Length: 206
Length: 227
Image (cartoon, rainbow over all chains, first blue to last red; front, top):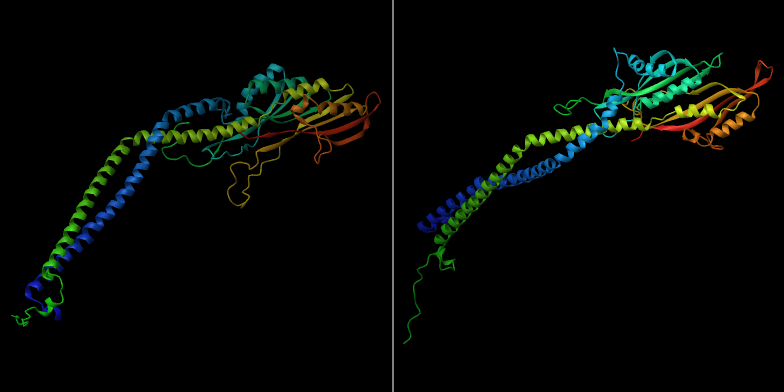
């Protein structure tokens, strides 16, 4: 202050004026320039992210015909499996198997005694796992007939039901050489558990 | 004439330290005003830039929003395609693991030697799947088995009057076309066919011949549940 005391009043005024103007400049920097810079940085980040989003959107939209065609191909490839899936008849898997196998057994003259449901077997999980999993659903068929009839029956099932697989069998000789007892286990693909709840709004109708 | 060198010093002390002809009282406000004007211009430029960027952001947002419905639809289709492909992969794996056995049974009847009588022919059920969580059995079980293969065997038991027809039968089963189903590997750690027993039966047949009972197991081509 002693320095100012010795200065002329005009100089003092100009110093105060300069200080006030410099203060305004500092305020301008703090309250206008800096927030504006921050906003620009944020806007640039947002712009960059939006540009990425737009690029992805345009790429996906451009891919749309390919995705639609791929989806159609998958649906087409999946249709035979869907038609071959074993579904319960009157809440019984064995009843459905009976309705499918009885005509084939009758064609070859095989006498089917019983159909028994067996526990399902899981299929290995693909990666990524689908929401709807599929399993192998075995049905045990107890029957009696000649070896030729049993072999014909198995061949006929394998031919007429191309997704039914023979899991196991036992043919035991009986006293009469033309009559054997057989236990045949056929397995079908069937719907199993779900790996996770379906995402909301995704997946669509099956 | 020499003028005297005497003169009066009219400068003040504060003015003495400055060598500049422009006085500090003039310079300081000018610098301060320049600084302030610079800041204002800087801010104005930045503000314009910000307005421009915000305009671009708004345009992009509008553009993206206009395509949002179509994009959501295609994303949903992509997700569905991914999920259905995974389902198809699992069903394809099932189909790959399917083998037909009717042909084997039919051909087996054709090559059966006259002196051999089968008492049982079986393809045993595969062992039950172990889906217990390997890390902690108390955790929920696995959704699928970790291995993609399943061993299959064919067990043949029967009677014969002599050993030769059985040896001949085993040799036949080890060749085409039976190699389509059966594995013939001698001398391996797990040989196929494996003779479980080949012994004389205690009972007598109707024509009073002593019969030999045999029990043979063939390893079959394993089922591979792979895509």
